[in-house]
Length: 295
Image 1 (spheres, rainbow, N blue to C red):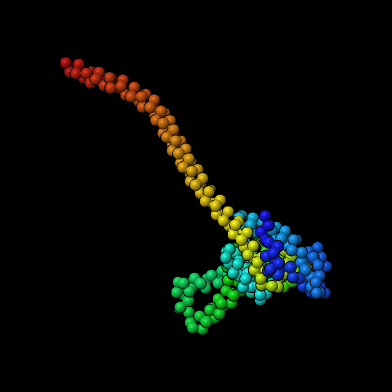
Image 2 (cartoon, rainbow, N blue to C red; image 1 turned 60 degrees about the vertical axis):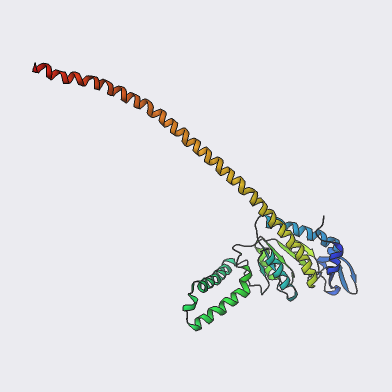
């Protein structure tokens, strides 16, 4: 059963494309018609593509991987930030910093710097600084938080990238392509779908359209996270049972070893007793010899 509904897509305005004179010919397979100089997107194809993208995101979430959401345009940033945060995924809604993917180690250093400042504030080191230094550190922390605060939990490169506007986020798309990171994107009729791995033909300008598609994708991610949680809960009792079985086996092995050791020591003890017995018998004869000589 498809995750999206034709009527709901229509109500959200997902079918509205750009002006016909601004279209990209590579989007022709996803265009249904032209009306009043505006291209109309084929929603039947949008439904199929949304389901395809949702399944990919669900599998990624189920395997414990991260998806980076990118949307720096005004009408999308608040929606994307809210939805991505609800499923605990990293997002970029401010300016895309060049090299955020291709120069990831440097970005991680900046994030670590921000974490160091947080530790300074917690342990009271921050209060020992001079007033001017405190002001500089505070400004630096605010700047880092604005640009990198949403990706501070991203310890390694994301497994996929979700982009709202391909034209506006072309730098992010290029970096992802260079590193072979799959890209999922809302692609309007004026955009080139070639560098996108999972194309969602949709209106990327209307807030309602962005919100509707984000809801579907985040729901799929949530399903994947819940399945992962259930799998872990099932594995935990099995691990405990395995540990108990291993403990019993270990104890039985130790018991067997102790029995073997006892069996080995028993003959040795018997032979020692046998050797000691003749020695005890010989001792009285030796003691009687001096008595005979005395008589």
